[in-house]
Length: 429
Image: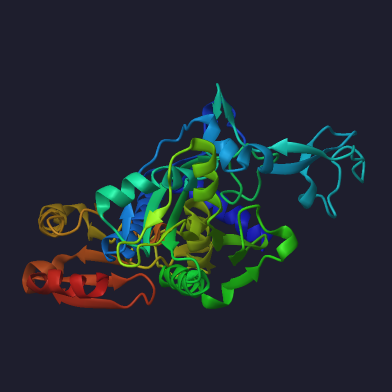
């Protein structure tokens, strides 16, 4: 399984999905850039998340809060004192590790590590007189009253946000799983105290459904409830959705019951009234908050792991091929490229360009490729997860039909050019 991660890392760089940050200068630990296909995949995940939880619902509104916030926010939220990991350092190799990560690890210098006593380490990045935010939640709490008044929502309702977050990880590892700059998609859903447990269970089901709808295999998704002694300072209950990565079962997403901790704390520290007033019952109270949250890069990595397949050569080429082939079985809605257009030979470029131009009016995530053998072009598209390849051949000049190849089944169908849009709309919807 670990070997599979190495193959994924190699593929991701070679195909322009994920690139080590500042690579020409030796890189920077835990920092990655996203190439054209990686950015497209990431954006498709975010768009689908936003459509599912904001556009298609009338009880959730979106905001974008600042990365930098007044330091008092992080004091009130408990992060300045509570956002702590235990750091241990090996006296032999001088490498630092999270205390949770040191089981069965060998020292690069001489066999077993010799660790110094653990010490506390705040994993927020210091930025002048404040911190780069380690999560997006606090911007939703500090803006709660303003959003409530301008959106004219009533309890229950939610605030959604996708945004950059930063954590000064003691040591980064496992590709995109633990990195220092990342995006979080989360919702703060405000409910009446007493309704929180029912809401929690509903959100857990909705969160799991969203992840499975991305194409994640159900057998690779597990739930883990945090025991009371390991709950965060704000949490009454937290359940993680873990994914079976190549490096083991790890947290992918989660749902937390934050109670009224955040609004109450910010009211106390800021002196501003952050209670909700119900016009119907004339009650005034701090709402409880259910927080479903997920990391975009972790989810992207899980999508890639589930879609990644290495097989013996599936495609016939004019060259001798001995290496294995890689196919990414992305759901069409997530695929960075939906359709690829090929002329069988360059002599047919004019006809192929006409088909490309017509389809590009309906789909922007479409590519045209006339370089190399047709087998090599199929392989390139399989490696980036393109669901359908369309080939214009000499028969097209006679019957006005094209060959459509399905990525997963490799079945080829002759489809009339006049029927092509309807065919693709049905397949890609």
